[in-house]
Length: 160
View (cartoon, rainbow, N blue to C red):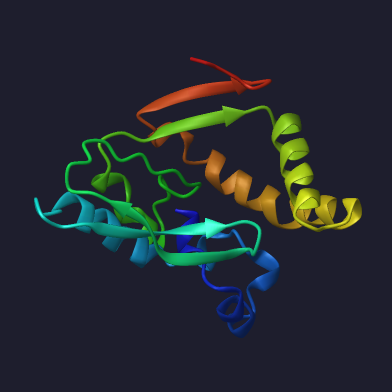
C-alpha cells in the first residue's frame, strides 16, 4: 500500500505534507484499482504495482511485477479495514485481513528510530510520531474488530 503514497510535490500542493501517512495522503482509489486488476488478472497478463522507496521518501510506479502464475498476493497497509472514503472497498477485495497488534511503547520506539534513520533529528522524530503517527494509530486501532485475525506482536515475536 505504501506505493500509493501521493508524491511529495502533490502533498505540498494539497497542504498535506506535514501529515504524510494519513489516509488522505494516499491514492486509495488507485490501490483499489490495483486490487481489482489482480482479482481479474488474465493468464498472460503481468500486473505492475508501485513500491515505496524509503531512501527517497517517494513511490515508484510499476516497480513490482505480479506474474500471472502468482498464486498468493500479500498486501499490507494501515487502512485496509477503514470504512471511510475509498478505503471502504478494500476489505471486500481481500480474502483475509489480519490485524497486527503491537505494544504502544514498542511501536512508538520503532517509529521514532525509523524517522531518525531516514534523516530526522531525535526531536523531529518524536514530534512527527506524536503529531502524525499517533493520530493515525488511533484511527487504525478502531478498525481492529473488523479483522479476520488478530495477532499480538511482542518484542519481535508474533503471538496469536
